[in-house]
Amino acid sequence: MKYFLIFGPPGAGKGTQSTLIARRYNFRHISTGELLRKEIAKKSEIGKIAAVLIEKGEFVPDDLVIGIVRDEICNPDTPERGFILDGFPRNTFQAIALDGMLEEIGFKVDAVLSLETTDSVNIKRIQHRANIEGRKDDADFETIRTRIKTYHKVTEPLVAYYKNQGKYKAVNGDQTVEENFMDICKIIDKSLDE
Ligand code: ADP
Image 1 (spheres, rainbow, N blue to C red):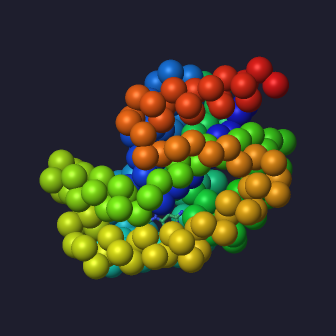
Image 2 (spheres, rainbow, N blue to C red):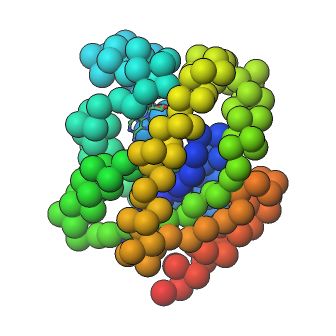
């Protein structure tokens, strides 16, 4: 089983690329953002907590998100060849938790596919998405700014974390969807050959 992470700031196109990857390689796409939005729609306890925080552009507590990911990853009857994790980990604590979780089941993170983008491009993409998907956290400029600021402060240090492990693979995320996907496929193909 292969485990890939898609990494990058809000609006980089992680969800779009993950969908394409999952389809081409028959991987299971795990998006913590999507899973949390499902909890919100169900009005579960987790959903109630997540709704308030997501709307403000803040993180959902680590233990809740880690629990959700654990349920998905440790589900033994998945027919797929691998996983694409999208939106997780988002800080060092989550990254260490993921390493531990995978170690327990005898696996590791194979590669981190990082969409390196500029903030102005991310903001434009989020504002465009706001008109299509109607997400509350995409609608307000201050919320978008909070999310991008948090990315630089809390999530970006993971670049060094994964570079140190030799797993960090950068893609120029400012390109088109198709160009990004081509670059990502080259990295995945190489990793699957190893
Ligand atoms: P984006 O990457 O565009 O911000 P996501 O759908 O990945 O969109 O995430 C939406 C929101 O869900 C985040 O702003 C955050 O509030 C919450 N969230 C998603 N993943 C995590 C995570 N790993 N840890 C904490 N909060 C998360």
